[in-house]
Length: 577
Image (cartoon, rainbow, N blue to C red; front, side, top):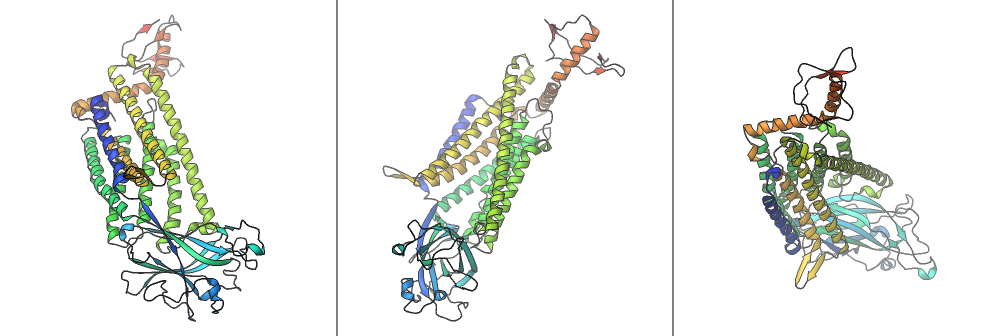
């Protein structure tokens, strides 16, 4: 990384570049806060209790809660008793969306959670570890008068976690349990206008299916989808940032290839970071508007995982490559201890995501958290990933501490160094401190805006202006990491001032100087011993100044443990008291 642009850039130019990047950062936050609506919308749905008195319930018949072909409905369970309607004949029907509305591909995904209204009855209480089993059918259509097309049909088991706060006495019958919400369904695309859910609660006392689950009065659903306006802003940002990062990445690699030496490890890692950022930016989501690509959520998780793994690896390697006295450099194998936890943690999270969203590609009602085995498996993956993350940050903090300790030691000896070596170390120190500053700033902004988005109501009102905090968080942080990668590739690219033969010679000189630094301590010991052999009167009170000393032939004799000077020894000697 000799002769990077940041080392040859004046303070004025660096401030100008920083100001420009800051302006774009503010714009990224304002786009989400002032232009985009909230990222998501939550819609509540109350199921309608339809009656299906057919003998063969398995035959395809879709019960509509409202409309011209609406089903035969009952208001509550008590109404079913005088009409001799059994529990197996009741179908909870939910139409998505609400009347006089329609879904859109711009919504990107649909996530549903389920809430059961269960009344307390002395003769029908919820048993311990009770499980409700639902027979769920999902259908879609794109016209209000078209036939429904089945999309999925699954048996959906969910464990109940309910508490009853009042005493379980006769006078408290009819009060409702307080039950946790249950994950119900997730679809990675919204390719159709209308969806219909038919939910049955089949009862089989012999097989103990839906026995001991209390008296279920109603089923409520909460649907969450991405706002179409936010999706358009998000796609626009991706479309703008993709060519920006791609162009700077091509420019960065072209500068490296123009040099007369092969690229070093740090340059390769910065380039790989640019590739991973470009991979995230590519707006393939545009195709989801016209195609039913349910795998887009999983694909997005994989892209983010690759970028985060590359970013964490870059921080480790950047610190390692600025270890001024480290002998083994410029080899990825030298960082296996630090990069290993990143690989293991990323693999665990990938397997977890495949077990969750990978299965949801064929079964949208699946959730790994609904079974004991699945919960233990998911927790195991998350715990291992968490341990790996902790190990990584311990390694990173230790390496940062080592670099700063090295810097403090070298800064005191900079005036005594030769000009080439002094410039080399000043560049290393400045590069490292600059990156640490902007990295800490980016990390701090990410944490601060995440906390703010969680504790606020989602928007602020200043006079007549409404600021969408959550949208500003997403667009601002996304733009910030793009600017971070952009700044890395621009500022740490080789400077044009060193191109050609002068640049090649400068790199060779700096490489030699750096090689001598690693041998400095050994040279001092060797030279002191050699001088003692040549001059027995050399006293311990005299010191050898070997910073500008070059010794090629200080060796140890075959039959002697003391060093001796070979005929190839050259270089000036200076001694002071």
